[in-house]
Length: 375
Image: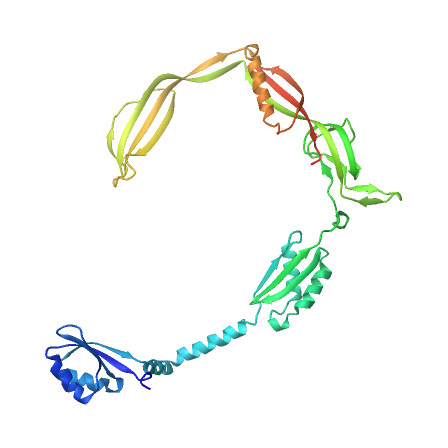
């Protein structure tokens, strides 16, 4: 009963506390008397005497600094009078117990080839009632195996508030996968070798093909003259051409810096210019460069310096015959073609074509390599 009793704690300030507390102790039992300093003391009394103690202290001119209620009985009393809290707590408990029996989430594991959205849609259509007691997991397993050919085994279980579906997919032969795509060329080239494994050829040795052209159709004609879909397989090699190009202009303008320049420096703080060297730029044709940097990263004041550089330029007309740079242009065009060459590829042949018209000479450098073009 003592643990359930409620007490009131008083914190008082007064002179001659011993006398006054002594008089009070003759009438009422005092607990946990604690002398905090010369004028301040705290003590506890049974809560039923709280008002009487308060009146006594005021009559003696004692200043009450603080009062606090303690004890389990006091807490229970407050809870019993707080009907709203009790009702809300009961409602929350009931709502939780109700929703706990409802499946909110579907988790699917093991999908590789099957479409997730298609599987989820199938489960939703067969689990219209999400209450746990209404879901027959064994029946759902059977329906999924009957509906999806790729499902070799499936496990359905309710874990918490989730419907957990674990699927093992079977490996189906190509003939059961439906329509097939033809083999298409990945490069431009000339067919040099064909090893057909399955399907119907669309090209023959010596044919010129472009990237995207069909090489093997995804079907065969059986002994009864019927068309039957199959997955096309073939090794098809071709001479593939990598081309690099470069142009030469016999007459062109070149921009050249004369060496004259003007540099303007400005120091600013918050957009206010504090210093400028005030140089004047009189160039008619020029190139411009600008840079901005702060004096110090750790400087509290964001002082920054801006440099503007003006370079005088002139336009020069360059006249140069192609024959003077022939070898240089051939090497440049060849380098442009080599960019497309992959590792382990062997160059069979190198050729180039030079065309000149209207003062422009174009060099096309062609590398011939042999590779499998069927993907």
